[in-house]
Image (cartoon, rainbow, N blue to C red):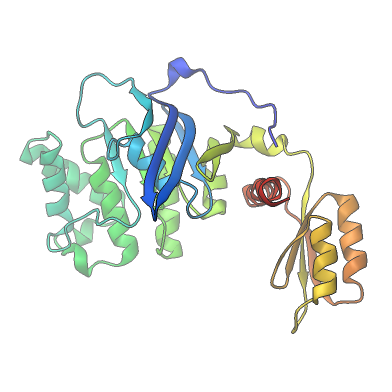
Length: 316
């Protein structure tokens, strides 16, 4: 699936990745984490990088952030000669010192990135107020909730006011209140002119904030473009059928459904195209149905469709 999507002007990019390759030792061979990934980050935009576990998202973020060297390709940065041009919050990493207070963390990271202590303290207090944590400024990070820790990590990544921000699963494991606070802050940062790269498994968050989206599968960009153009360029609807079953659908029906290209996950069947939907419903008859709904014009439906088509190409 390659919709005809207008690509941004590369000359506007604050960061441009060209043909990135990365592999890691695995057993007696190699794992190809990235296979020629090219992406651009632009001011006042959020690019959301989607993909299943193992697709290469975190590797891509670490290369773009300068934390990992690629085996091939290059990253061009159009920011005048500052070492501290980016901020990052990485999933699975300890982004803060848990024995320091929230404010002490911000002062430490601010001075590490070139601010004097007085300015770092002022910026730290300002940012903690912005994220609703002014009352937690002197509380040690290890005693904060997961959501409060994530908001503090975001503040630490922004204390030196970088033009580029990398966020790898920033809402993972946080409650709904913290998710909403992070979502609102991302939109505010974009309006302030930041270029933001976001990875997330929460497709509703991605759809709410992403100006552009890239779907990464097995180390390659399977689809990339402006979010609304990508969705409009999706030619066929995805339908989700939820069955009211206590037992499985049976091997015979499963084989028929898979022959039509349907994907079965427990009590949920997904299929592309209205004509195929009717064939699937005929096969399922007389099994009880809870609901049938269309998943078109959503990143969730699009993501599943791209993943399904890739699996079909790989496995036939």
